[in-house]
Length: 341
Image (cartoon, rainbow, N blue to C red; front, side):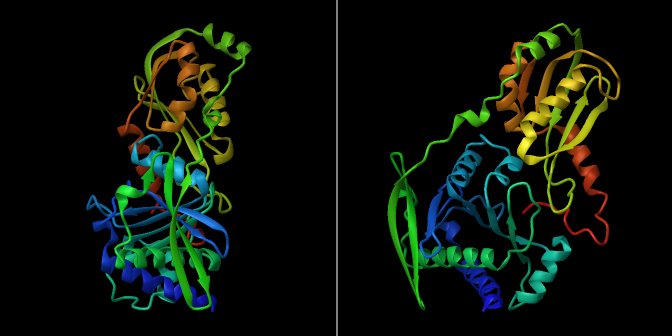
């Protein structure tokens, strides 16, 4: 029975790509699906309206909603988004891009394996963990959510303009009774985001110590990407600080997802105090980052130190470093370092 859910998941995926719900719903039209039998709430973004990438992203509870909503307005970076809550996804992938574990999952459960091109990439992820093929319970969740999307599309029940009503969002309740599945719609008040998560306090003693440091005529770039390495099935961030004037990486260090703010500032402080590749003490005139998380958390603190912080979409040097990491494949017995869906 458990294997059957995995097989049914591939069948419903084929049906979803056949009926193309993205022709009706944009990826910014977020809605909820509540699986009433298990009391699980997931928020959904259907990808494909832009013609760039096709599939479905499912994120659990209100943290997941805010992650998806902030993604549509570019108020969150990808690494933070996929670590916000339980993450499930369906997308397309070429066979040669499927990591070993996912290729084996497709071969075991895909009904038309080898005939479908490209392949379905069905993935699951807990915050701070690696992407993996769905477990039994996760396959069941994805199946019933995709099944609901297919039914709603078939019955023309999707009205994206009505997904948001004031401060409420449309949620579809899915109730299973033996072989019958009932879908009903309702609105629920959107739970507000707790802004305290972005408050990062630095003691006056630390600030006073840093303000005494000399000023450096350089710009630092800073990033904290996830997915470069895996340690015992855990996916840490890798804090990277690069000196643009010197053209060198000052520091590169792995930190846990749960403490990325605290650890990233500790590393930055140590760089200011001379614990870096150049062993130079001082404050740069500017720090650029491609991480909205680092920007939101540190901008006020750095401003108090006279450092301008800028958030940009793309940093070429950081991209070169990340690309260099991916040029080194994982060991044959290590399937945990994979690209992101």
